[in-house]
Image (cartoon, rainbow, N blue to C red; front, side):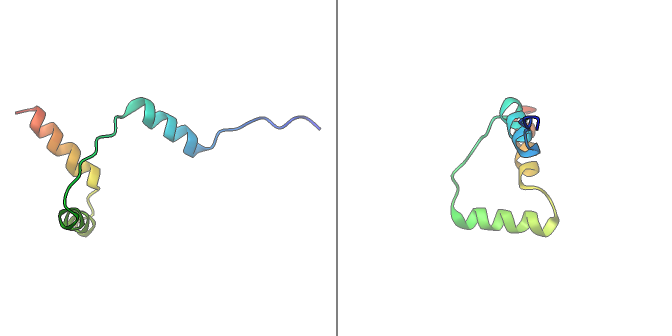
Length: 62
């Protein structure tokens, strides 16, 4: 039987792409603020990252 070719899962492929393309930025905020932010994003159906990206873009365009 032929040797099985090593394959890469789509998760691995996405992880490598994200590591190559993006930089992770983190912030420490009070738990109450984080909970309120997550709840409002969920209620409005808006991804949390989208809010942060827009804020950064607005800051850079000042």
